[in-house]
Image 1 (cartoon, rainbow, N blue to C red):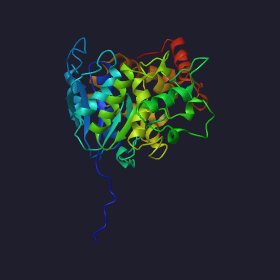
Image 2: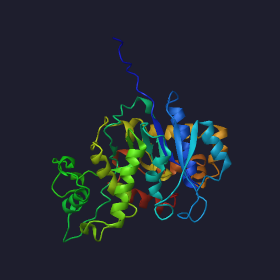
Image 3: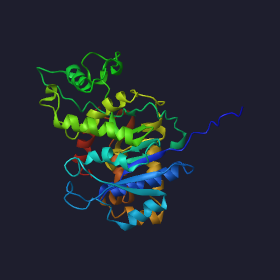
Image 4: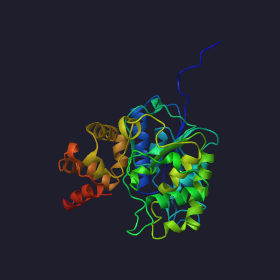
Length: 334
C-alpha cells in the first residue's frame, strides 16, 4: 500500500480589503506572505465589501495601484455583500466576508494589519479543530462592582446557545479572573469550511446583538462583538483554546502589529527587518509611501525614534501605557 504524503494540503488565506488604511495593509500582508513563504501554494483571497445601504460611500479599494500590487503578489479580490453590518460595525466584515470564500475548502483568516514573517505553509493546522489568537488583553467583559462577574456573564452566553462552558474553563487560573475563560483576539482563526464557520459566527453575533442575555446589561458590545462571539463559535465547532503549537502564529510565523507605532515599539528585530525588507523595492515603495503613516514611520524612519523609547525586554504591562508614551512624544500615527 502506498504511503500517504506528509506534505500538507494547500489552504486558502483570507484578509479583508477596503478603501483607505486597510487597502495598504492588505497589500503589505500579501507582499510579506510572498516574501516569507515563496512556496505558499494556497490562494490569497482579499474579501472586498461592495457598495450598499450599510455603507455611506463606496467601500471598495479605489486605489488602482494597490489593486495592481495585490495582483502582482497573486492576491485575488473577491467581492461580498454586507447585509448585516457595514459602516456601523466594520469588524463584521470578517464575518460576512467568509461567504466569499470557496465552500468546503480550509481557510485561515488574518486581520489585514498582520505581517507574515515565516513559513505559513509549514504551520500544522488542524482544520477540524479551530482556534484563534491568544494575543490579547482582558478587554471584555468589564464586570461591575456588584456583579454579575466573569463567570455569570460567560455562562449566560454559553447557555444562550446550549453550550457547555465546562471544557472551556482553564482551572489553573484563579476564579473569576478573565484568563480563566476562553477569550480570543479575532486577529486570526481557521476552520475546514468558511461557510460553516461564517454561518455560525453570523448567527451567534446577530443573536447577541438583538437579544443579549440580561447578564450583559451594562457591558459594551462594540467593538468587542466579534471577540465575544468567537469563543462560542470555536467551542461549538469542536475547537479549543489552542489546537496548534504555541509560538508560530503571533510568533515566528506571523505578527499582528495593529498599528505601525506599536510594531516599532514592541516587536522583535526580526519583525522590523521583514517590514523594512518587504517595503524596500521601488514598485512597492511608490505605492505604499502615499499612505502617510507608512511614509513617515518606515520611509522617514520615525519608527526608529519610537523604537528607541522602549526596552523590548521590559515593556509596560499594558498596551495603553505604550500608546500614551508614544503620544507624549508626538510620534503616534494610525
